[in-house]
Length: 453
Picture 1 (tube, rainbow, N blue to C red):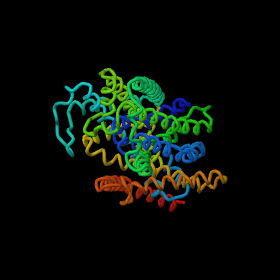
Picture 2 (tube, rainbow, N blue to C red; picture 1 turned 60 degrees about the vertical axis):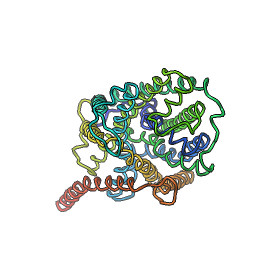
Picture 3 (cartoon, rainbow, N blue to C red; picture 1 turned 90 degrees about the vertical axis):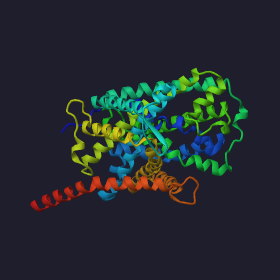
Picture 4 (cartoon, one colour; picture 1 turned 120 degrees about the horizontal axis):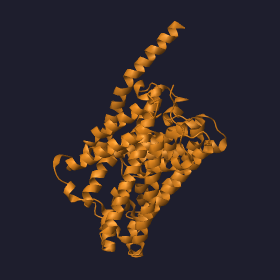
């Protein structure tokens, strides 16, 4: 049986995990982040989120080398719970990674259209008030085909692209942050909080699962580690990704708040971050720089999430939780080629939903991330580790449980609305339609084998 290629080292794991974590969301929702918490509230919300996730990172650092399976959370939970729980966990985790692919595909059109307004023509239709333009879809389609081909070619090609885009993006962020530092004012930080301090921090902390999701994706590539990659390296990659993500959001939040007051960031503007820098510097080149960095981030996120989602799909199929055909490994490239092609096709189809269809599902993605982290902590606790490990697992269960509750309890600010519940219901129903036939077939095979014995 052909296995996945073993090529990845520490820098590859960091680049791919950071790519999963940071895409274009920082540019698209920065106004929402600052309106939720204010400058200091946003910084404290992200800091609290990152520090609270450190025990979860520790749990993953222990689980990944112990159970090096690309289905990760689905494999961990399967050690102690029935296949139905394993499938439900994997299906929710899969949503976290897959959904980023069409989101970034659509974002490519928005970014390009902002720099070149002539692309905002040939409107095909509208969904939820959002226009869907033909050039945007064509650009997303071309990007999807290109990245599908890169990842079909082998993990080395995908990892090389991940490293190139990640370090280019980080360099560009430092450049535009330094440019903004010369044209802002500390007075722009006031008011420090948009609401009462605790409420401000809570409103930002609610979206941390979505924006910090990615450090745990190291487990999805665990079967592709190079032969000399030690088990401790997984935890190093996880912790490095989480801490780098926290510093990244510190820099971006501080830079935007420094160049423009929060009140001036209008949600009616397409990219308020770029507008704020352009007003502060009175120059258009800073907009080009920021949008270029966003495009690089888009490619890094699209690429990394395509790899992660295809590995989850491949490994779930190998466990007969979904169609076994998806577990095929190409004998030459040693990639889960069928799963990669399916992810590419599904991305193209999902892009036709437009932003109106994807935004509610993104809210569900924040909860699915927390559910995945919680399942890992529950699994690790069931493994009966030493007392420090149990404490980390219990703390992780508490934190991730709160992350889920603040989105589903109706009296908590920022909770799910009807459209988010509908999106969650549709995703659950789709999972049942996909899983039930294969579960039934698996039971028939197992019963036949038992009767022969």
